[in-house]
Amino acid sequence: MILALAGGVGGARLAQGLVQVLEPGQLAIVVNVGDDFEHLGLHVSPDLDTVMYTLGGVHNPDTGWGRAGETWNFLATLGRIGGDTWFRLGDNDLAVHLERTRRLRAGEPLSRITADFCRGFGIAHAVMPATDDRLRTFVDTDAGELAFQEYFVRQRCEPVVRGFRFEGAQGARACAPLAALAAAGAPHIDGIVLCPSNPWLSVAPLLAVRELAALVDAPSIPVVAVSPIVGGDAIKGPAAKIMRELGHPVDVSGVVAHYGRRVDGWVVDERDRGFAAAIEAAGQRVAVTDTMMTGPARAAALARTALALLDALRTG
Ligand code: FO1
Image 1 (cartoon, rainbow, N blue to C red):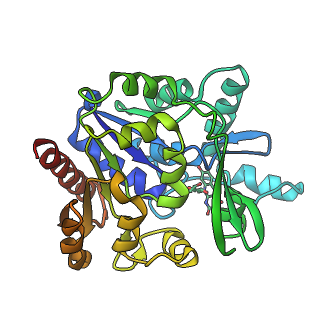
Image 2 (tube, rainbow, N blue to C red):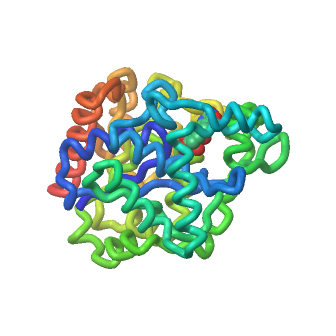
């Protein structure tokens, strides 16, 4: 069983590659919920929906989030009557938020709701939130502490980042399906893939869930990370800006240093081949390949490279 830890768009893209290579029983995709928030009375789970829509083949390829071919009648009327339209909710997307909110209010766990929704979108692989408990990412900035979507969408990641807080992390436990996998432990979990998601905004809130951190830190479980920084920049999103603001080198070395010993092997892009020697000198393995997931075939190729590195780490 491979665990893939996924955040936003980059995570969803590699997840789409992994599901082409691994059978449903061989892969579990564990998704960040730190971006979740209550909006217009609805519980919105952006990263879960981005993974679900991408694996369901209905995502908007331009934005990475939301549905392809979406219509915006609800939002247009909301605007006319003075509602908040800064967070764009499409008509098809709305069904997921309404039904998720209804079932959460009925006391159902997010992991069970997610499993049912993914089945509805024809997804055979296991997709689950890291936790069924409340866990929220807050970003400390020069404009004060901001809730995640306030920072990311409303203020377009413009405030200068000083740090992060994952509210609820202390008590947040792995969701039931993940707890079962964690209990099965090393022999059952052959390896972990850290998808090329934002290390600070998406992966950190995943690793704030203690059972997940314990699996990543388990000496007997190899961990491979795909660098989200390519050629000194992020493919999408504010990772490079955040690295600059936190004083990290904005390149592969900055990401490698950030994860430290938690990662046993790195997959870096061809353009970052120059970092391979230093990574290996530090005792980690490295694979150099084209990490641009421009489509499903490229995502599957990158997944194969990451899995091959896990195999190499497992067999030593
Ligand atoms: N991102 C935006 O930049 N603007 C939006 O209006 C927006 C709406 C939205 C609606 C549903 C959803 O699932 C995601 C949405 N996102 C939007 C993306 C979201 O903020 C990010 O995907 C994650 O929170 C970070 O990866």
